[in-house]
Image (cartoon, rainbow, N blue to C red):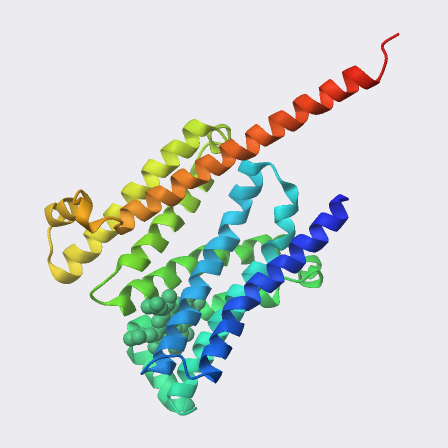
Length: 283
Ligand code: HEM
């Protein structure tokens, strides 16, 4: 398949995958399968999707570089826009839950810190989605890159909103924060280290430690639970998998995937050279 054909199918497949959670949610809504609190369930599903797509869009630059596969850049924009659309849907469901009373919505956003930061993150994602087109890129020139740095504070606020609304159990936001730490550490690393196995191993350790620190900080500040109890939970096999284990597993899975990709590339290179050697006669 030509590279253009591959990019075409990659973009179509991404579009389908991005639409699936919304279609699934619509189906569950239609068949009355959203449990006792359908609006809360829909708020949670759309919030989760926003965070997942936000992290996926941030993962594409490291993925392109470590997998050495350029076509991945072609799907970054649509994943980012999907994150903004899911955030918009998440907000609309919240507004619908408030009986479309915009004054109540505005007062709640002003009054509740987790809604204030969620709304700020939503505004940032909306600005990024609107200006993501080629036209805006041309119009804003160098400022476009500066504006698109907003993705980082937007992700930080989104994850903080996730933590605060999770209240007692911060397992999922801790995983999101650990993976976000992986993505930020990758960007902060010296370029030489970024694509090597040693660098990826360091990242796995760094992201796992970061997840542990986030969890310790949260439970320490909010619930007054000391770090020794979290260490005990993390080494208890009955409690496996805890958030730190999940971050470590994802980070190690990334290393395995990079290994498989490099192995496949090396094999392809070897067979191409062999084919050339055996089919083109040397003079
Ligand atoms: C980029 C922006 C946002 C992101 C990424 C986001 C993400 C999330 C996530 C991940 C959850 C938890 C889902 C779960 O527990 O499974 C959540 C819950 C929630 N979010 Fe957002 N959110 C955003 C903006 C907003 C805004 C603007 C509002 C309303 C003004 C809002 C209202 C809520 C509410 C009411 C909940 C549920 C709280 C509960 O169940 O007690 N979010 N959000």
